[in-house]
Amino acid sequence: MPISPQLREELKQIVLGGFERMVNDRLDPDDVMERVASLNNVWFQLTLPGVDTLEAVFRPMKISMGSVMEDVAKRIAEESHPQAIPNHELVNYINPATSEFIASRVDELRNQRANPDPAHDIAEILQRQNNRAADAQETSHRVDLFVIDASGISHYIEIKGGAQHDRGKAAGMKSEALQTLALVNSPDARYKVGASYNAYGENEEFRWSNMLRFFVLNNDLLVGREFWNFIGANGNTYRDLRSIFTEIGTQFEDTARRLANSVLELIPQTRLRITLTGNDDEDETGGSNTSVQLGTLTS
Image (cartoon, rainbow, N blue to C red; front, side):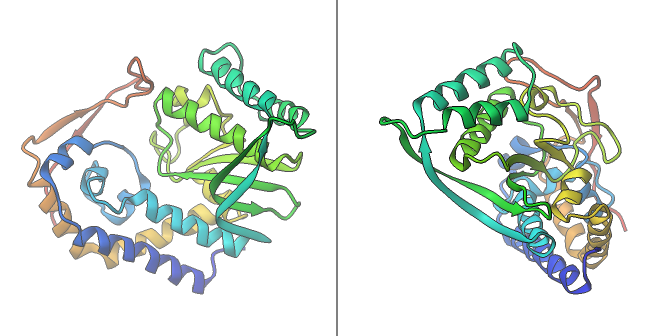
């Protein structure tokens, strides 16, 4: 079902509250220069139309757009799934044989000696976690969101702003995914990384190879529209959320313009060359570099 009017208002307040905290945060010019980064964040584009690289405005602030979108996702999930628990804590044992498999598996994927296969990973982990070993280690891990869907499958979800992570970060995320599945130790458990937007554009294929060497797109990696429609258990959740952000963009327009201009005045260059960096030892641009024009907003 679509996002209800009541939930719609709740989500607007979550986002507006996040923006107000951003506005009140102190801006550091050096931080602005260091952090100008992500492209094609649809949520910035809807709330601040008129600036090409909207991440330049908000990344320097302590309250990031990623944290706001995480709160939005958790609230939608609570309304949409039979059970949804934000910030879910897991505590269980992990056998040494399981830890060895996880390290070996991540190394295989990192060096492309194997392809990602979530079903294979679950089967291998269940086999090694079948009985508790005498030297098993008690371990805990917190996931951003735990949901049980209408078919009874449990999903353990790590929520990210975007999914353009370097190879080392992606490897660490895969290790956490496998450890989580070991702690849950159930054939009905699934792990997902969810990214709130697609850096290649709303209607473009996500092709960031560092993530795709560890995760399977639309299986244990959900990006943009697919993530939101899963969170909302509805094929129209992404559309509804876009509509909410468009409303916020109008409501927040005056403050947003003042904020954007104050940040852009801190940046001495009028044009920046931004290259998407795809892994930890060489650049990956997905086939093209992107030039971004920075300028003040006009009414």
